[in-house]
Length: 430
Image (cartoon, rainbow, N blue to C red):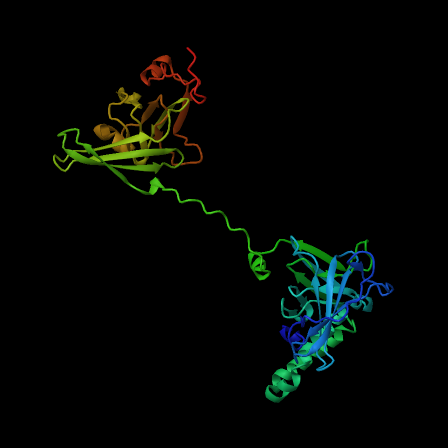
């Protein structure tokens, strides 16, 4: 059952009027003094204030105090001698804490009912044994005791009972039964659990054994959820909006060129593609509307790799023909069983399947009559053959990275390429 009706009648605390009664000096020392009945110097400050019930002047009393083993709070109390309206509440004198707090108290004896409690208006109070809850912001903050919390809930439920008995007798009877259960709790006939959950971190339940551990009290600090942050009026810092960057991976770029056959104006389409478990490549396709000539070419999207790559794949099944294959323009192809070798740059760059690459000799390979090895040797390290077991190793494939020979570097134009001092702008060392 929810105790939303536990709110004390009337409106919030009165507003301070411009005319104020002489304020009593709280005495020397710190502004927030430890709460104590023996401290005669600790007196509340009195301010004449406007009553929000009858709109005549009443009196507001403010007490700045400190709860032992807790923190500073402000206790305010308003009373109006004209209409009899009064209101008491507390507020934390500090900021909202970095974490929320949950107090779980097992009430076993009457002494536990006398424990001091600070309950802010953002705290939720629960008694699981009765399925009872006082929601956050349904009551003003209070400096009270465990017994006082229960008594306040009982008063809130009783205040509208006469009206309920007249209009909804069955509902009123059920609430009477529940009020009786709450009154039984005050006798502590059996243990029960009191939970105060405050996302602001400013509620408190007294530990009478402090600074020693209290076996009956469990204190849990937790990170607030986004919903709790919004409830407290806290707004997380919005991430800085980064300017939208144009993503060319999702676009097909077009540019004008000439047909390599008839030299007529043609259009080339270009797209950047990410090959899984490999790298980005650039696929280029040209279609000439004049003569019908079509070309497609694949280029590596990255630089020449530090090491060359040799991929040796053992073809054992016709399904191997469907593997994706990227052959760069610097890659040679070899099939030792057929004494077949395709030199570098003969077919240019291609992104196809193994079947597509072997279409000229598919009569020997496609039906699986001959088991053969397919070797791709790319000194630039920019070729690829699909591993259908990725990310695990392929038992029929061997990938080797090797250091290029002088002749291979010569063919790639790397022997005469000097990069020393390039980044610092210094002349290359000869």
